[in-house]
Length: 222
Image (tube, rainbow, N blue to C red; front, side, top):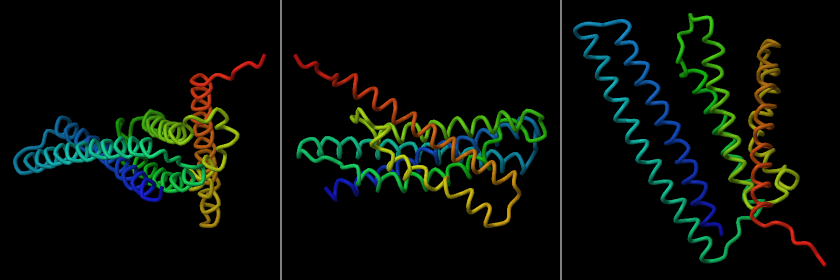
């Protein structure tokens, strides 16, 4: 049981890091190519930007290959778990949810810094760039909690410790923001993000519960 858990945690964290790393590299490559198109640099500056673009693409490819390898490891671990009849208990899922919550904070910070689909000078930049960040974060919490709550027809009510563990990093963030003396606007943004994370985590658990009930409908007694 412990070995399977270690494989899940290590491969899962590596998979998430590789997937988001690949996305970040692709984003940097896109930004570099856009800068080349808009600024039209010449000489050494052009060569330098092209070298950065090529490096980012190669790095994205390497990260994607690593992510695919981790998917293969997780699938193999899952098959092994089924063969030996192990059950990952709720307590172990909470252990898995804690590092996923820590990764969510790092993911948000990186996205907030790197997502520049629309230049900051554009009046719509806050809405478009911020919207992309929120969509990615919503998908992250939804998918994570869905996978953690699979096969549980009462996941929303029985998996609340997992939901709390998954979102705990963002839940305590407003308190840390207040303690650091930040403005009320920053506090409200941190609190809003925490609520946002809890809502989409609950949505993932609700969908998992619905899928479990559909897969194993209750039988009517005579």
